[in-house]
Length: 615
Image 1 (tube, rainbow, N blue to C red):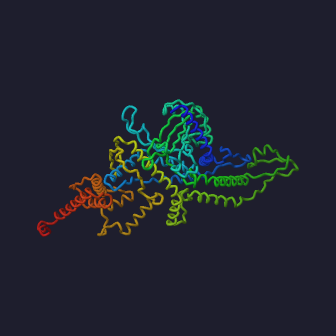
Image 2: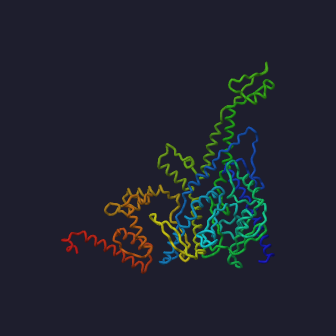
Image 3: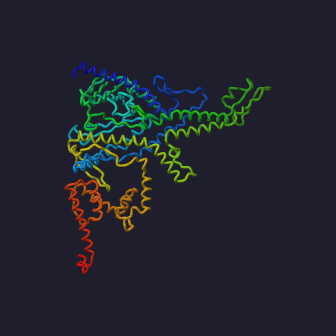
């Protein structure tokens, strides 16, 4: 690339970034305000230029305490949303035997990768940002320095998933609803120049900037978010530069898109989009967006914190005015004739018990002014504001305090809990959709970069550990779907209650009115007590052996097989997942062998004198 073109490209990217930063500034101001209210710095407001400034007291005696309900609301929502961890599976591209096998392999590869990446912790961290700021992003890319070491300085590489705060993302239009609606996205963050030299092997001069990576901002311990940002900016501006990454989708003249990295007026990298992570083998952005609540016609979502700020301000004002009134009632307000007493002594010591108050002879003695009682309006307004917290946040008082009213029946309490779960189900669904999109990106990246044979350690059924050897050719589909419904709409307690109802109705019994070993095993497994005793463990082993035969396609009747249980597993597979053709014919013959074995066992149990008659 000619130097003149490089300079033009750098200037264009920096100009583009400055324009997007100006357009996005109102959203960034709101995010900073949300963070301040979440951590307890609630006497602040946003100025016209987008800065967060403190609100001072009107009088020195005014109460300025914070009664932070926003943090408890967010923490309760996070605790509830932490249960949303969907089970994902890869749907086969077709009903062909090979596609079915590769889809099962891809499902196991996906499960192993999510376990290795600790996706639970990643989703928890992302949910924290989406609940506070309204939006969180996940970067799904390929790390060449991850995975097993092949030789000195060479690794097999692996997928990496990182949580990105909304402060780093600049879309080409804030009116684009989704990431897929954008034509280009800029990611900008402040990085130490030494780290830039290590990654890109180019020397960049430090530059001062307002761009700060909030993922590294320490807050708490008396340090507000705004002061932490200011201190961090002052500390890092001496040796940091803003790294601007612009991702542009493919066009007619650039069929593979464009990926450019600029820092300190230097072009660090230029090339096509690095990942084939879109539908039908297309290149797209390596970002997945998650919102707490959608903001219609806007790229960035909204949060409960933003909606709760006016209520929190009103609640703080009511509580502080109430405490000021209580102080007047307890400490009193004294009326003193001018010059009748020593005012300096009275101001410093007040009216202590047993104090001798000396006043001028002939003057009116000091007296306490009657301040009346606390107006009932304080209590009414405080209760109304607490109810508004509940109405806006979708978190009831039962969820926040973990206490149920003593006069409420169990049925009514269960209905109330289900209503709370329903109000949170929309935010939970956004987490599920983000997890599914991340999984699709992971499968597509393995399909692009996993050409060499790899070995994955996978936890199978019954606690078995499987080592699966695979490569990119074993992935034929990237259609990831949900295995389970929304976890908030179908909680473990609800499923267990349903199982008990089915048991009471007798729907789990066989024609003899008894529960078979296999049904008992599945029943205990559904209740979370799988493998509870040795008998159930044996049934699980038999079931696992039959399923392993189905998966491998190698069938053999063993001496110690539970033929009836094997027949049930094989027939279920034959009627659902088994492809037609040679494998189904082979499986039918194997089922017939199990049936013949059952007949032989019955015949062996007949006495010798009756065996000829039976035959």
